[in-house]
Every structure is written in C-alpha cells, then in structure tokens.
Image (tube, rainbow, N blue to C red; front, side, top):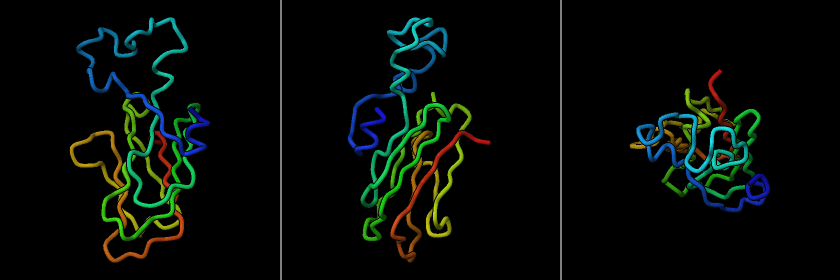
Amino acid sequence: MDEADAGLQSWTHWDLNYFLGNHIRPNPESFLGCPDHFKGCIKDFIRPYAQAIAGTPTHMKYDRATNAFTLSFQPDGSIAAPTEIFLPPYRYPSGYSVKLEPAEALFTTATCPGFANKLCVTLKSGAAAPALLTVTVTPPM
C-alpha cells in the first residue's frame, strides 16, 4: 500500500465498518472476517486517501505508526471543485487536525457537505494558486 501511495497509484479498499455500522458487530473493534486475535487483516488496509485532487498530485503518503497523511499537489486555479480527502473513522475516531503549507490563507478546509469523514480543501475565491500545496492530516493534539 505504501508503494501504491508512492507511485500515486490507486488501489481498492473501504472502511466497511463505517458503512455497516456498529449494530452489525457486537464489538466495534472487531472487523468482518477478522477474529479479534488475528493481526494481519482488513483493518490494515484502512487508510486515508485523496478521492479527488484539484490539480496535479506530486506526493501522497500515509504513516500507519502516527496516522499522519500527507498529500502534495500543484493546485490548478481553473478547477472550482475542491480536493477531497477521505479520512476513515477507524484511523481518526476523535477527529483530525489539518495543516496546509505554504499558505493557509489561500485555502479553506472543511468537512465536505454530507460526509463526516471527508475533508474538502478549496482555493479561496480570487486567490492565486501556489506552485505547490501540501496538506497534512494528523490525529488531534
């Protein structure tokens, strides 16, 4: 999965617990098809990723040890749609913190409408897009 991120390559997996809800599983920490004692399982595939990028991606990385997700891209000011980053509830159960570099004043960040765990990053109206934007998401401090 790290190699897929490094190559900006898509891969498929969903946080099924988010979609199925805790009412199906008696233990919210258990996963479908994964006995509680089994270490290598579906939960290892649950990670944040960019669903849509308003520009050209240059770097994407997720650190499982710290739950830090980093996305760098060259913003395209002609794209009105936001960059969308899915943040799985399993990785960010208490929310998340967002850092933008270099210029937080040029972009807005907010939860995407209708999606509790999707971050929307949007270039502010009238702002000139920087050559590169890096979005870093971490668990709250």
